[in-house]
Image 1 (cartoon, rainbow, N blue to C red):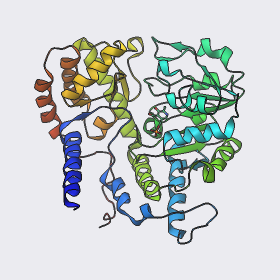
Image 2 (image 1 turned 60 degrees about the horizontal axis):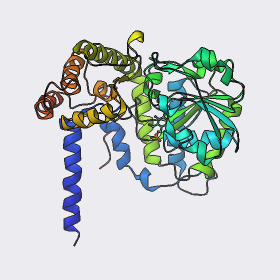
Image 3 (image 1 turned 90 degrees about the vertical axis):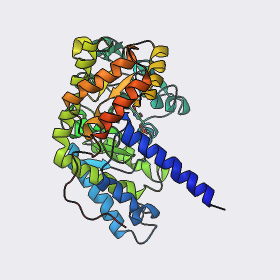
Image 4 (image 1 turned 135 degrees about the vertical axis):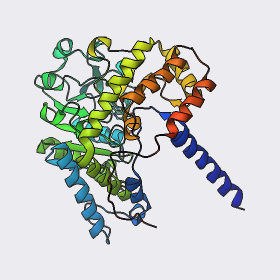
Length: 398
Ligand SMILES: Cc1ncc(COP(=O)(O)O)c(C=O)c1O
């Protein structure tokens, strides 16, 4: 009875696995490749267990210790006095912030989704659900960044000011603007968490932000999940205090242990990894530009992060994402090209030139996707092992 389903499951999973890992250039900046060591945590007993702050469940003494160890690592990697690894995703962390620090009718300030802001906190998402008044920074399109001067007058009223964004090629002016804010400044580092871990971007907790929150799986090559970091006891205890039982019940202990592995990787290799990501973005952007591909942020050096942004009309970007996919170059409809996963897999600046050539063939319509796809497959075959991983690690679970 079940054999048909098992075969279908097995076949489809293998198709996905072989295609995305062995045949594609994975360039979605929200994604990354975890190490085998990190993934081995998902085979442990932890994924079937519960723990809770009030110790309602027994049998958790080692699980609790693992959670404490992960939080200790997070504090160390990010130079934070407080860390909470219970949010199940970046969005859950955003939700914890808004549910703790705002009430209906309050104003919050963030980057408009039209300018690449994360929609989840805006009038399209939590802002509407929670009855908040969403205000948006003035934006400088050429700089692909918040217009700090033009946004000064917006800093007084909002209860919460969010820096960070989904389209983020350059550091945000957090230091300058947080000094003028009367509410709590929060940096949503979902995208740039790995760059911050490696000291290759900005440092929000030392630039006036009370909280840094976000995903643990974008530029940080960790398990899919969320995190809250802070040096501000009051802000942290308000947000962290709301997590259980309000926002998360089961914290997915296997994910928490997997995050510990990724944080150890960051302690050891975070700096060279993050520097290599930014260097690769710049190499990719320069090579694309010299091929004639239109990019945003030219006057600012294109990128200081893991993102390079194509500069075409929305309908064209959607079309290009489809054509690139046909060539096994996986991006998104917004024209973001990410370098985190390629860097993680060992691609360097020289390979970025080859990648740029392949991307340009599609974007400029010079070659058919089939032609490019063959070249992509040949390139990808050479980069099959994640780098920046721990060389000595206990044997994974059976
Ligand atoms: C800036 C930002 N914050 C939050 C999120 C949500 O993250 P998650 O998918 O971990 O819930 C995203 C998603 O891409 C994002 O770009």
